[in-house]
Length: 113
Length: 113
Image 1: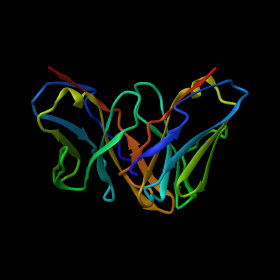
Image 2: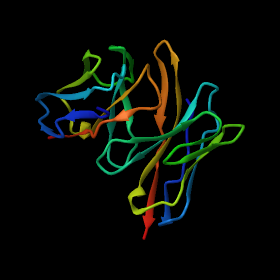
Image 3: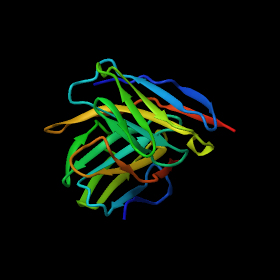
């Protein structure tokens, strides 16, 4: 299995909702990432987990809460989001620690109403 | 943090070789140069990575001059399916939670029949 899967593909949520995005990989990779991508912009790094520990948090608002239950799973918990948080949320993984060669999932298209 | 500069867009006819150059004047000693391809509404896909001189794989070649202040991604004989955004990245994991990796603004390549 050489892919990163993300669920759901699309998500619409209100500003008072709580939802979660899920990411999974079975390549034995030990680093996993969350990115946010707005339309016609490059991906922006949000969080990096290395060996299941949060190693990098790029000053992301607390309404985004990452979780890494095990080396294959990565969640992003969402609460009290704003309409400007609407974007494509991408998950990626890499073999070892934070690295430049990453494997990306297809993303979750999030719309906050 | 090394900043990258690449052309916003390029057009090419099918069957031609395409060269996309990325400038990274303040690249650090530890930094690797990585290129990704992204189709609309999909996650980026790793293309190639290098540190110096030339790297070639089944998809592309990467040329890096001795001063490493720029790099050129070369795509041989492009087809319509190569129409995508190409991102140049410069960065590295420096240990102790220090990870510098920022996507450039990307080059939108349009292949014309």
